[in-house]
Image 1 (spheres, rainbow, N blue to C red):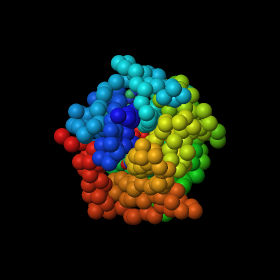
Image 2 (image 1 turned 135 degrees about the vertical axis):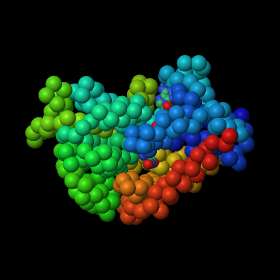
Image 3 (image 1 turned 60 degrees about the vertical axis):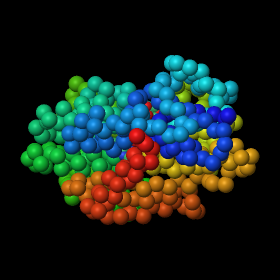
Image 4 (image 1 turned 60 degrees about the horizontal axis):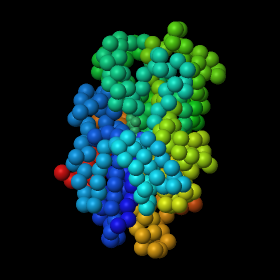
Length: 378
Ligand SMILES: Cc1cc2nc3c(=O)[nH]c(=O)nc-3n(C[C@H](O)[C@H](O)[C@H](O)COP(=O)(O)OP(=O)(O)OC[C@H]3O[C@@H](n4cnc5c(N)ncnc54)[C@H](O)[C@@H]3O)c2cc1C
């Protein structure tokens, strides 16, 4: 019996375990570990913030994750030794034949001075809940939204947040006394797709949201409520930031980030193998040449599943990672746009854009349902 150990039951880990469960390979056992008791889609945070979705309703319990030959264990990963391929958790020690690290990305709000004291975020469930409470008491003023560091999860999500905030403030009748500004260190919202970037920039302009590309907020002054950029100070009444992202501390301590860009896990972009034999990394924690998003983690899981099966069968992997994924973008008013990215199949990335529509809103909901149906059996 050969064991595949998957660390992290998020977008990537769930897809990989589901695929391996249906693998034709004999004598394969899959163990998947997560510290949580349930899965939540990243985009549910927008629903928690703007649509009063209770976080409990967004959670899908792992007790429903019951695929043949897959065992789910709710444990905290405390140590990873990629050389020995050994993992310690708060409850056990594992020595798998194949180890897959899919632990996602953590946030580092402390990396931006003043942000913990005076900033809000909606990238975590607690952050979305806290911002929802703050917005309930907000009566107009200067709102600054800012991407604080790159890379970050789901490149469209900061713009979705801005457009949905505009809609919420309009509904409450306080948009006309609110000034909204958006800062990002990037030159365009979605660099791989000029069409998508143009649509987002135009949508911001139409909503009266001032957009400042290539301008990074590097600190807040909590006493004066000032955001500090290299080219000047920006006063705010409410500051909403996308915090700096990083690998989880247990990954950083493991040595897996050696050779990776900016502290992410180095992987072969075609196979998602790390330099350590039998150890893969996929999803947000991996330094693959794609944005951080669930759909790319899912595509990576397909490649890793094929690679593991080929390896057990004694052959070289047939499938190379293509970095494909369809991202949906909320524009408000029930309208959703779509960008279909393919980063690695051809000589250059392609990412055509579909204009926002109600049909695409339905398609986004259906895409989430399809995943829930595939991953969760009970
Ligand atoms: C507001 C917002 C909107 C988004 N919208 C979209 C979207 O529309 N489409 C899209 O594709 N993506 C979207 N994303 C991004 C998406 O959520 C992530 O990119 C995706 O979840 C990454 O998958 P992953 O498997 O790499 O990591 P994750 O899904 O984050 O899974 C990592 C898992 O590891 C577990 N873990 C971490 N450390 C430990 C430890 N020490 N011990 C045990 N378990 C641990 C965590 O509990 C977690 O379950 C959005 C994100 C945000 C914040």
